[in-house]
Image 1: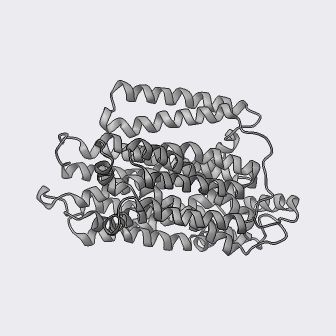
Image 2: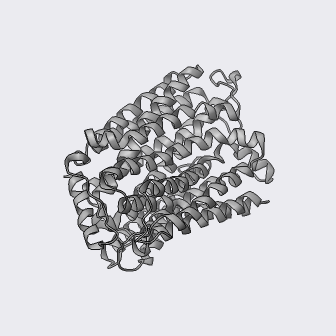
Image 3: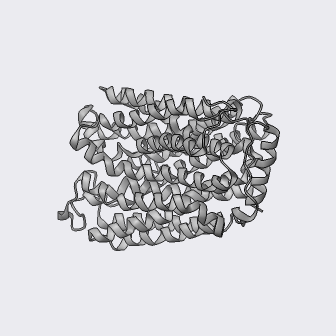
Length: 491
Protein backbone atom coordinates (compact mmCIF):
# COMPACT_ATOMS: atom_id res chain seq x y z
CA UNK A 1 0.00 0.00 0.00
CA UNK A 2 1.09 3.60 -0.41
CA UNK A 3 3.03 4.88 2.58
CA UNK A 4 2.58 8.12 4.45
CA UNK A 5 5.80 9.47 2.94
CA UNK A 6 4.85 8.63 -0.66
CA UNK A 7 1.38 10.02 -1.17
CA UNK A 8 -0.24 9.45 -4.53
CA UNK A 9 -2.26 12.20 -6.15
CA UNK A 10 -5.85 12.26 -4.95
CA UNK A 11 -7.10 11.81 -8.53
CA UNK A 12 -5.34 8.44 -8.68
CA UNK A 13 -7.04 7.47 -5.43
CA UNK A 14 -10.39 8.58 -6.83
CA UNK A 15 -9.97 6.47 -9.97
CA UNK A 16 -9.32 3.36 -7.88
CA UNK A 17 -12.26 4.05 -5.57
CA UNK A 18 -14.57 4.71 -8.52
CA UNK A 19 -13.64 1.38 -10.13
CA UNK A 20 -14.51 -0.55 -6.96
CA UNK A 21 -17.74 1.33 -6.29
CA UNK A 22 -18.80 1.08 -9.94
CA UNK A 23 -18.26 -2.68 -10.06
CA UNK A 24 -20.32 -3.21 -6.91
CA UNK A 25 -23.12 -1.02 -8.29
CA UNK A 26 -23.17 -2.98 -11.55
CA UNK A 27 -23.56 -6.26 -9.70
CA UNK A 28 -26.60 -4.86 -7.90
CA UNK A 29 -28.71 -4.80 -11.03
CA UNK A 30 -27.04 -6.81 -13.82
CA UNK A 31 -29.03 -9.94 -12.98
CA UNK A 32 -32.42 -8.22 -12.63
CA UNK A 33 -33.50 -8.29 -16.32
CA UNK A 34 -32.21 -11.85 -16.90
CA UNK A 35 -33.67 -13.70 -13.93
CA UNK A 36 -35.86 -15.81 -16.28
CA UNK A 37 -32.69 -16.87 -18.14
CA UNK A 38 -30.97 -17.84 -14.89
CA UNK A 39 -34.11 -19.65 -13.75
CA UNK A 40 -34.11 -21.80 -16.87
CA UNK A 41 -30.36 -22.42 -16.85
CA UNK A 42 -30.30 -23.52 -13.20
CA UNK A 43 -33.58 -25.51 -13.42
CA UNK A 44 -35.33 -23.75 -10.58
CA UNK A 45 -38.65 -22.02 -9.89
CA UNK A 46 -39.58 -18.36 -10.16
CA UNK A 47 -39.97 -18.01 -6.40
CA UNK A 48 -36.57 -19.56 -5.74
CA UNK A 49 -34.67 -17.56 -8.35
CA UNK A 50 -35.80 -14.30 -6.73
CA UNK A 51 -33.47 -15.20 -3.88
CA UNK A 52 -30.60 -14.41 -6.25
CA UNK A 53 -31.63 -10.79 -5.67
CA UNK A 54 -32.92 -11.08 -2.11
CA UNK A 55 -29.77 -12.79 -0.78
CA UNK A 56 -27.59 -10.04 -2.22
CA UNK A 57 -29.82 -7.36 -0.72
CA UNK A 58 -29.85 -8.97 2.72
CA UNK A 59 -26.09 -9.53 2.77
CA UNK A 60 -25.27 -6.00 1.66
CA UNK A 61 -27.66 -4.56 4.25
CA UNK A 62 -25.93 -6.45 7.04
CA UNK A 63 -22.31 -5.99 6.04
CA UNK A 64 -22.38 -2.37 4.86
CA UNK A 65 -22.53 -0.68 8.31
CA UNK A 66 -20.41 -3.39 9.98
CA UNK A 67 -17.54 -3.04 7.51
CA UNK A 68 -17.81 0.75 7.65
CA UNK A 69 -17.32 0.55 11.43
CA UNK A 70 -14.43 -1.91 11.18
CA UNK A 71 -12.78 0.35 8.61
CA UNK A 72 -13.04 3.29 11.01
CA UNK A 73 -11.28 1.13 13.62
CA UNK A 74 -8.56 -0.78 11.79
CA UNK A 75 -8.04 1.23 8.60
CA UNK A 76 -10.23 2.06 5.65
CA UNK A 77 -7.76 1.11 2.91
CA UNK A 78 -7.17 -2.43 4.11
CA UNK A 79 -10.89 -3.02 4.60
CA UNK A 80 -11.59 -1.56 1.15
CA UNK A 81 -9.23 -4.13 -0.33
CA UNK A 82 -10.82 -6.90 1.77
CA UNK A 83 -14.32 -6.06 0.55
CA UNK A 84 -13.15 -6.09 -3.07
CA UNK A 85 -11.54 -9.49 -2.53
CA UNK A 86 -14.86 -10.81 -1.15
CA UNK A 87 -16.69 -9.28 -4.12
CA UNK A 88 -14.26 -10.98 -6.51
CA UNK A 89 -14.60 -14.35 -4.76
CA UNK A 90 -18.38 -14.15 -4.91
CA UNK A 91 -18.23 -13.24 -8.59
CA UNK A 92 -16.10 -16.27 -9.41
CA UNK A 93 -18.44 -18.58 -7.52
CA UNK A 94 -21.51 -17.06 -9.22
CA UNK A 95 -19.92 -17.39 -12.67
CA UNK A 96 -19.24 -21.13 -12.23
CA UNK A 97 -22.40 -21.97 -10.24
CA UNK A 98 -24.32 -24.95 -11.59
CA UNK A 99 -27.16 -24.87 -9.07
CA UNK A 100 -29.33 -22.14 -7.63
CA UNK A 101 -28.11 -22.96 -4.10
CA UNK A 102 -24.50 -22.21 -5.05
CA UNK A 103 -25.61 -19.08 -6.89
CA UNK A 104 -27.41 -17.81 -3.78
CA UNK A 105 -24.34 -18.46 -1.61
CA UNK A 106 -22.23 -16.59 -4.16
CA UNK A 107 -24.58 -13.61 -4.02
CA UNK A 108 -24.35 -13.56 -0.22
CA UNK A 109 -20.56 -13.36 -0.52
CA UNK A 110 -20.88 -10.60 -3.12
CA UNK A 111 -23.06 -8.66 -0.71
CA UNK A 112 -20.03 -8.22 1.55
CA UNK A 113 -18.88 -5.77 -1.12
CA UNK A 114 -21.49 -3.32 0.16
CA UNK A 115 -18.75 -2.03 2.43
CA UNK A 116 -16.96 -0.37 -0.50
CA UNK A 117 -19.23 2.69 -0.38
CA UNK A 118 -18.78 3.86 3.23
CA UNK A 119 -15.09 2.96 3.08
CA UNK A 120 -14.63 4.95 -0.13
CA UNK A 121 -16.35 7.98 1.41
CA UNK A 122 -14.10 7.73 4.46
CA UNK A 123 -10.97 7.54 2.31
CA UNK A 124 -12.08 10.60 0.33
CA UNK A 125 -12.60 12.61 3.48
CA UNK A 126 -9.22 11.57 4.89
CA UNK A 127 -7.17 12.04 1.73
CA UNK A 128 -8.65 14.76 -0.46
CA UNK A 129 -8.13 18.53 -0.22
CA UNK A 130 -11.12 20.01 1.52
CA UNK A 131 -12.40 21.84 -1.56
CA UNK A 132 -12.40 18.55 -3.50
CA UNK A 133 -14.30 16.45 -0.94
CA UNK A 134 -17.84 17.44 -1.94
CA UNK A 135 -17.26 16.81 -5.64
CA UNK A 136 -15.57 13.45 -5.08
CA UNK A 137 -18.20 12.20 -2.65
CA UNK A 138 -20.96 13.37 -4.98
CA UNK A 139 -19.40 11.59 -7.95
CA UNK A 140 -19.01 8.31 -6.02
CA UNK A 141 -22.57 8.55 -4.74
CA UNK A 142 -23.81 9.13 -8.28
CA UNK A 143 -21.83 6.11 -9.43
CA UNK A 144 -23.86 3.84 -7.15
CA UNK A 145 -27.08 4.83 -8.89
CA UNK A 146 -25.48 5.11 -12.33
CA UNK A 147 -24.03 1.62 -11.97
CA UNK A 148 -27.44 0.30 -11.03
CA UNK A 149 -28.94 1.86 -14.15
CA UNK A 150 -26.12 0.68 -16.41
CA UNK A 151 -26.57 -2.84 -15.09
CA UNK A 152 -30.10 -2.85 -16.48
CA UNK A 153 -28.85 -1.39 -19.79
CA UNK A 154 -25.89 -3.77 -20.26
CA UNK A 155 -27.47 -7.04 -19.12
CA UNK A 156 -29.31 -7.72 -22.38
CA UNK A 157 -26.39 -7.08 -24.77
CA UNK A 158 -24.00 -9.12 -22.60
CA UNK A 159 -26.32 -12.12 -22.50
CA UNK A 160 -27.10 -11.82 -26.22
CA UNK A 161 -23.43 -11.65 -27.23
CA UNK A 162 -22.04 -14.09 -24.66
CA UNK A 163 -24.15 -15.72 -21.92
CA UNK A 164 -25.32 -14.89 -18.41
CA UNK A 165 -22.06 -16.16 -16.83
CA UNK A 166 -20.35 -13.06 -18.21
CA UNK A 167 -22.59 -10.92 -16.01
CA UNK A 168 -20.13 -11.98 -13.30
CA UNK A 169 -16.89 -12.45 -15.26
CA UNK A 170 -16.84 -8.87 -16.56
CA UNK A 171 -17.29 -7.18 -13.14
CA UNK A 172 -14.71 -9.65 -11.74
CA UNK A 173 -12.04 -8.20 -14.05
CA UNK A 174 -12.81 -4.67 -12.84
CA UNK A 175 -12.90 -5.74 -9.18
CA UNK A 176 -9.59 -7.61 -9.35
CA UNK A 177 -7.86 -4.65 -10.98
CA UNK A 178 -9.34 -2.24 -8.41
CA UNK A 179 -8.26 -4.44 -5.48
CA UNK A 180 -4.67 -4.60 -6.74
CA UNK A 181 -4.58 -0.86 -7.42
CA UNK A 182 -6.06 -0.08 -4.00
CA UNK A 183 -3.40 -2.16 -2.27
CA UNK A 184 -0.53 -0.45 -4.05
CA UNK A 185 -1.78 3.11 -4.55
CA UNK A 186 -4.40 4.04 -1.93
CA UNK A 187 -2.76 5.29 1.29
CA UNK A 188 -3.91 4.07 4.67
CA UNK A 189 -5.79 6.57 6.82
CA UNK A 190 -4.43 7.85 10.13
CA UNK A 191 -7.95 8.57 11.38
CA UNK A 192 -9.05 5.68 13.60
CA UNK A 193 -11.79 5.09 16.13
CA UNK A 194 -10.31 3.08 19.01
CA UNK A 195 -12.34 0.30 20.57
CA UNK A 196 -13.87 -2.97 19.49
CA UNK A 197 -16.96 -4.26 17.73
CA UNK A 198 -20.03 -4.63 19.91
CA UNK A 199 -21.10 -7.99 18.55
CA UNK A 200 -24.40 -7.98 20.46
CA UNK A 201 -25.44 -4.87 18.55
CA UNK A 202 -24.16 -6.38 15.31
CA UNK A 203 -26.25 -9.52 15.79
CA UNK A 204 -29.38 -7.52 16.62
CA UNK A 205 -28.79 -5.22 13.64
CA UNK A 206 -28.44 -8.24 11.37
CA UNK A 207 -31.53 -9.84 12.90
CA UNK A 208 -33.93 -6.96 12.38
CA UNK A 209 -32.61 -6.25 8.90
CA UNK A 210 -33.09 -9.88 7.87
CA UNK A 211 -36.58 -10.04 9.39
CA UNK A 212 -37.69 -6.73 7.82
CA UNK A 213 -36.26 -7.29 4.35
CA UNK A 214 -37.41 -10.90 4.24
CA UNK A 215 -40.94 -9.82 5.16
CA UNK A 216 -41.20 -7.05 2.58
CA UNK A 217 -39.44 -9.07 -0.15
CA UNK A 218 -41.74 -12.08 0.25
CA UNK A 219 -44.95 -10.19 1.07
CA UNK A 220 -46.12 -10.04 -2.57
CA UNK A 221 -46.04 -13.86 -2.79
CA UNK A 222 -46.93 -14.73 0.81
CA UNK A 223 -49.53 -11.98 1.23
CA UNK A 224 -49.18 -8.91 3.44
CA UNK A 225 -51.69 -10.34 5.90
CA UNK A 226 -50.09 -13.78 6.14
CA UNK A 227 -48.92 -15.00 9.56
CA UNK A 228 -45.34 -15.31 8.28
CA UNK A 229 -45.13 -11.70 7.11
CA UNK A 230 -46.83 -10.32 10.23
CA UNK A 231 -44.64 -12.47 12.45
CA UNK A 232 -41.45 -11.30 10.74
CA UNK A 233 -42.49 -7.65 10.99
CA UNK A 234 -43.19 -8.07 14.72
CA UNK A 235 -39.81 -9.74 15.20
CA UNK A 236 -38.18 -6.83 13.34
CA UNK A 237 -39.89 -4.26 15.59
CA UNK A 238 -38.86 -6.07 18.79
CA UNK A 239 -35.28 -6.47 17.59
CA UNK A 240 -35.06 -2.81 16.57
CA UNK A 241 -36.07 -1.76 20.09
CA UNK A 242 -33.54 -4.15 21.64
CA UNK A 243 -30.87 -2.98 19.22
CA UNK A 244 -31.39 0.69 20.13
CA UNK A 245 -31.24 -0.16 23.86
CA UNK A 246 -28.09 -2.27 23.51
CA UNK A 247 -26.30 0.26 21.29
CA UNK A 248 -27.24 3.15 23.59
CA UNK A 249 -25.72 1.38 26.59
CA UNK A 250 -22.67 -0.06 24.85
CA UNK A 251 -19.22 1.41 25.47
CA UNK A 252 -18.31 0.44 21.89
CA UNK A 253 -21.51 0.69 19.82
CA UNK A 254 -21.56 -0.39 16.22
CA UNK A 255 -23.87 2.54 15.46
CA UNK A 256 -23.53 5.56 17.73
CA UNK A 257 -27.12 6.44 18.66
CA UNK A 258 -26.05 9.97 19.56
CA UNK A 259 -24.78 10.32 16.02
CA UNK A 260 -28.05 8.94 14.62
CA UNK A 261 -29.97 11.58 16.60
CA UNK A 262 -28.05 14.43 14.96
CA UNK A 263 -30.59 16.30 12.89
CA UNK A 264 -28.47 16.32 9.74
CA UNK A 265 -28.04 12.55 9.98
CA UNK A 266 -31.58 11.42 10.73
CA UNK A 267 -33.21 13.87 8.33
CA UNK A 268 -30.86 12.86 5.49
CA UNK A 269 -31.44 9.19 6.29
CA UNK A 270 -35.20 9.75 6.01
CA UNK A 271 -34.70 11.25 2.55
CA UNK A 272 -32.48 8.29 1.63
CA UNK A 273 -35.19 5.83 2.68
CA UNK A 274 -37.78 7.52 0.46
CA UNK A 275 -35.41 7.83 -2.50
CA UNK A 276 -34.54 4.17 -2.16
CA UNK A 277 -38.23 3.39 -2.60
CA UNK A 278 -38.28 5.17 -5.95
CA UNK A 279 -34.96 4.04 -7.39
CA UNK A 280 -35.11 0.30 -6.76
CA UNK A 281 -38.76 0.02 -7.74
CA UNK A 282 -38.01 1.82 -11.02
CA UNK A 283 -35.15 -0.53 -11.82
CA UNK A 284 -37.28 -3.55 -11.01
CA UNK A 285 -40.57 -2.69 -12.71
CA UNK A 286 -39.98 -0.24 -15.55
CA UNK A 287 -38.20 -2.84 -17.76
CA UNK A 288 -41.05 -5.26 -17.05
CA UNK A 289 -43.56 -2.60 -18.07
CA UNK A 290 -41.66 -1.86 -21.30
CA UNK A 291 -41.44 -5.57 -22.16
CA UNK A 292 -45.21 -6.08 -21.80
CA UNK A 293 -46.65 -7.10 -25.20
CA UNK A 294 -48.56 -4.46 -27.18
CA UNK A 295 -51.49 -6.87 -27.25
CA UNK A 296 -52.04 -6.02 -23.59
CA UNK A 297 -53.27 -2.61 -24.67
CA UNK A 298 -50.57 -0.62 -22.89
CA UNK A 299 -47.16 -2.30 -23.21
CA UNK A 300 -44.47 -1.34 -25.72
CA UNK A 301 -43.40 -4.91 -26.46
CA UNK A 302 -39.68 -4.15 -26.21
CA UNK A 303 -36.95 -6.79 -25.91
CA UNK A 304 -34.78 -7.17 -22.80
CA UNK A 305 -31.98 -5.30 -24.57
CA UNK A 306 -34.18 -2.45 -25.88
CA UNK A 307 -35.99 -2.00 -22.57
CA UNK A 308 -32.63 -1.64 -20.85
CA UNK A 309 -31.41 0.91 -23.41
CA UNK A 310 -34.47 3.06 -22.74
CA UNK A 311 -33.13 3.53 -19.21
CA UNK A 312 -29.77 4.78 -20.50
CA UNK A 313 -30.67 8.53 -20.40
CA UNK A 314 -31.20 8.22 -16.64
CA UNK A 315 -27.70 6.83 -16.13
CA UNK A 316 -26.12 9.50 -18.33
CA UNK A 317 -27.82 12.51 -16.73
CA UNK A 318 -27.38 11.05 -13.25
CA UNK A 319 -23.64 10.77 -13.75
CA UNK A 320 -23.32 14.26 -15.25
CA UNK A 321 -25.22 15.82 -12.36
CA UNK A 322 -23.19 13.75 -9.90
CA UNK A 323 -20.00 15.26 -11.34
CA UNK A 324 -21.48 18.76 -11.09
CA UNK A 325 -22.87 18.31 -7.59
CA UNK A 326 -19.74 19.57 -5.86
CA UNK A 327 -19.89 22.94 -7.60
CA UNK A 328 -23.64 23.13 -7.05
CA UNK A 329 -23.16 22.44 -3.34
CA UNK A 330 -20.46 25.12 -3.10
CA UNK A 331 -22.71 27.69 -4.71
CA UNK A 332 -26.14 26.86 -3.32
CA UNK A 333 -25.52 24.53 -0.37
CA UNK A 334 -26.13 20.78 -0.14
CA UNK A 335 -29.61 21.21 1.35
CA UNK A 336 -30.79 23.30 -1.58
CA UNK A 337 -29.37 20.78 -4.05
CA UNK A 338 -31.11 17.94 -2.19
CA UNK A 339 -34.50 19.65 -2.21
CA UNK A 340 -34.17 20.68 -5.87
CA UNK A 341 -33.23 17.14 -6.89
CA UNK A 342 -36.19 15.76 -4.98
CA UNK A 343 -38.60 18.22 -6.57
CA UNK A 344 -37.30 17.50 -10.07
CA UNK A 345 -37.72 13.75 -9.49
CA UNK A 346 -41.47 14.15 -8.92
CA UNK A 347 -42.06 15.11 -12.57
CA UNK A 348 -40.86 11.89 -14.27
CA UNK A 349 -42.91 9.68 -11.96
CA UNK A 350 -45.97 11.67 -12.98
CA UNK A 351 -45.03 11.06 -16.62
CA UNK A 352 -44.55 7.33 -16.05
CA UNK A 353 -47.95 7.16 -14.39
CA UNK A 354 -49.95 9.08 -16.97
CA UNK A 355 -47.84 9.51 -20.16
CA UNK A 356 -46.20 6.19 -21.02
CA UNK A 357 -47.59 5.28 -24.45
CA UNK A 358 -44.61 6.33 -26.59
CA UNK A 359 -40.87 5.68 -26.50
CA UNK A 360 -40.03 9.40 -26.47
CA UNK A 361 -42.09 9.87 -23.29
CA UNK A 362 -40.07 7.16 -21.55
CA UNK A 363 -36.78 8.69 -22.76
CA UNK A 364 -37.72 12.16 -21.49
CA UNK A 365 -38.91 10.79 -18.16
CA UNK A 366 -35.65 8.85 -17.69
CA UNK A 367 -33.46 11.84 -18.53
CA UNK A 368 -35.30 14.06 -16.03
CA UNK A 369 -35.29 11.34 -13.39
CA UNK A 370 -31.51 11.02 -13.77
CA UNK A 371 -31.12 14.77 -13.18
CA UNK A 372 -33.15 14.62 -9.98
CA UNK A 373 -31.55 11.44 -8.67
CA UNK A 374 -28.03 12.63 -9.51
CA UNK A 375 -28.48 15.87 -7.57
CA UNK A 376 -30.21 14.28 -4.58
CA UNK A 377 -27.95 11.25 -4.15
CA UNK A 378 -24.79 13.33 -4.27
CA UNK A 379 -26.18 15.93 -1.87
CA UNK A 380 -27.19 13.24 0.63
CA UNK A 381 -23.67 11.83 0.72
CA UNK A 382 -22.13 15.28 1.13
CA UNK A 383 -24.46 16.09 4.01
CA UNK A 384 -23.64 12.87 5.84
CA UNK A 385 -19.87 13.24 5.39
CA UNK A 386 -19.98 16.86 6.55
CA UNK A 387 -22.38 16.16 9.41
CA UNK A 388 -20.29 13.71 11.44
CA UNK A 389 -16.73 13.63 12.83
CA UNK A 390 -14.09 12.15 10.54
CA UNK A 391 -13.76 8.99 12.63
CA UNK A 392 -17.46 8.21 12.11
CA UNK A 393 -17.57 8.85 8.37
CA UNK A 394 -17.51 5.17 7.43
CA UNK A 395 -20.27 3.97 9.70
CA UNK A 396 -22.49 7.01 9.06
CA UNK A 397 -22.15 6.71 5.28
CA UNK A 398 -22.69 2.96 5.52
CA UNK A 399 -25.89 3.41 7.47
CA UNK A 400 -27.16 5.99 4.97
CA UNK A 401 -26.52 3.59 2.08
CA UNK A 402 -28.10 0.82 4.12
CA UNK A 403 -31.25 2.81 4.78
CA UNK A 404 -31.51 3.50 1.04
CA UNK A 405 -31.32 -0.26 0.46
CA UNK A 406 -34.06 -0.85 3.02
CA UNK A 407 -36.17 1.75 1.22
CA UNK A 408 -35.50 -0.09 -2.00
CA UNK A 409 -36.75 -3.36 -0.57
CA UNK A 410 -39.86 -1.65 0.76
CA UNK A 411 -40.45 0.11 -2.55
CA UNK A 412 -40.05 -3.04 -4.64
CA UNK A 413 -42.38 -5.00 -2.38
CA UNK A 414 -45.03 -2.28 -2.29
CA UNK A 415 -44.77 -1.77 -6.04
CA UNK A 416 -45.22 -5.51 -6.61
CA UNK A 417 -48.36 -5.54 -4.49
CA UNK A 418 -49.85 -2.50 -6.24
CA UNK A 419 -48.95 -3.58 -9.79
CA UNK A 420 -50.32 -7.11 -9.42
CA UNK A 421 -53.48 -6.09 -7.55
CA UNK A 422 -56.57 -7.33 -9.38
CA UNK A 423 -54.69 -9.63 -11.77
CA UNK A 424 -54.58 -13.40 -11.60
CA UNK A 425 -51.51 -15.49 -10.87
CA UNK A 426 -50.84 -16.18 -14.56
CA UNK A 427 -52.19 -12.94 -16.00
CA UNK A 428 -50.42 -9.80 -17.09
CA UNK A 429 -50.85 -6.86 -14.68
CA UNK A 430 -53.48 -4.30 -15.61
CA UNK A 431 -52.39 -0.89 -16.84
CA UNK A 432 -54.03 0.64 -13.79
CA UNK A 433 -51.64 -1.37 -11.62
CA UNK A 434 -48.63 0.34 -13.18
CA UNK A 435 -50.36 3.73 -13.11
CA UNK A 436 -51.06 3.42 -9.40
CA UNK A 437 -47.57 2.02 -8.77
CA UNK A 438 -45.70 4.86 -10.47
CA UNK A 439 -48.01 7.36 -8.79
CA UNK A 440 -47.06 5.77 -5.45
CA UNK A 441 -43.38 6.33 -6.26
CA UNK A 442 -44.20 9.94 -7.08
CA UNK A 443 -45.82 10.36 -3.67
CA UNK A 444 -42.70 8.89 -2.03
CA UNK A 445 -40.60 11.50 -3.86
CA UNK A 446 -42.91 14.31 -2.71
CA UNK A 447 -42.37 13.11 0.85
CA UNK A 448 -38.60 13.05 0.21
CA UNK A 449 -38.71 16.71 -0.86
CA UNK A 450 -40.64 17.59 2.31
CA UNK A 451 -38.20 15.58 4.44
CA UNK A 452 -35.36 17.54 2.83
CA UNK A 453 -36.75 20.69 4.43
CA UNK A 454 -35.93 19.15 7.83
CA UNK A 455 -32.21 19.04 7.04
CA UNK A 456 -30.33 21.90 8.76
CA UNK A 457 -29.40 24.79 6.51
CA UNK A 458 -25.89 24.37 5.13
CA UNK A 459 -23.35 27.04 4.40
CA UNK A 460 -21.56 27.15 1.12
CA UNK A 461 -18.50 24.92 1.11
CA UNK A 462 -16.39 27.71 -0.35
CA UNK A 463 -17.12 30.01 2.59
CA UNK A 464 -13.69 29.32 4.10
CA UNK A 465 -10.24 28.87 2.62
CA UNK A 466 -9.53 25.34 1.41
CA UNK A 467 -7.92 23.11 4.05
CA UNK A 468 -6.94 19.45 3.93
CA UNK A 469 -9.30 17.17 5.79
CA UNK A 470 -6.45 15.07 7.18
CA UNK A 471 -2.70 15.67 7.25
CA UNK A 472 -1.07 12.25 7.18
CA UNK A 473 2.18 13.43 8.73
CA UNK A 474 0.36 15.11 11.62
CA UNK A 475 -2.64 13.02 12.69
CA UNK A 476 -3.55 15.44 15.44
CA UNK A 477 -3.88 18.24 12.90
CA UNK A 478 -6.05 15.95 10.82
CA UNK A 479 -8.62 15.83 13.60
CA UNK A 480 -8.61 19.61 13.81
CA UNK A 481 -9.14 19.88 10.06
CA UNK A 482 -11.95 17.33 10.19
CA UNK A 483 -13.64 19.46 12.79
CA UNK A 484 -13.20 22.48 10.56
CA UNK A 485 -14.91 20.69 7.68
CA UNK A 486 -17.88 19.81 9.81
CA UNK A 487 -18.22 23.30 11.21
CA UNK A 488 -17.93 24.89 7.80
CA UNK A 489 -20.56 22.75 6.17
CA UNK A 490 -23.46 22.68 8.56
CA UNK A 491 -24.88 24.94 11.19
